[in-house]
Image 1 (tube, rainbow, N blue to C red):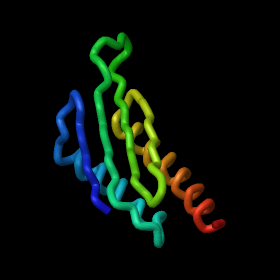
Image 2: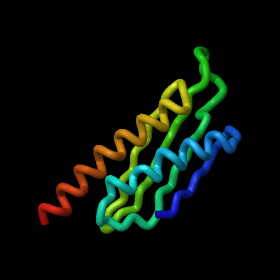
Image 3: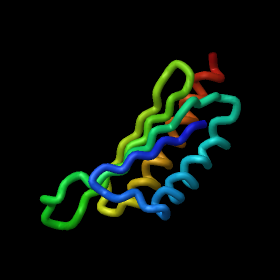
Length: 103
């Protein structure tokens, strides 16, 4: 699986890159026999006009056969947004595997 990471309005530090890589290469155990061609991860600082701190957005697009699994979450902490996106993607992936294996 090819992992592509994009950062918008923030710097993609080596620590952030390694955290994202660690989280999303762990998805391969949930994929099983499903071949995913690529996984696009985008992290973003949404805007600078919020009164109570920054709002971060994390989005993941996982290309699996016959469909695209997409999850997007916003949080006040970037790492929390990445964790929530990964957890929700695991739920969608297990649901997808159940549908595929049922056919």
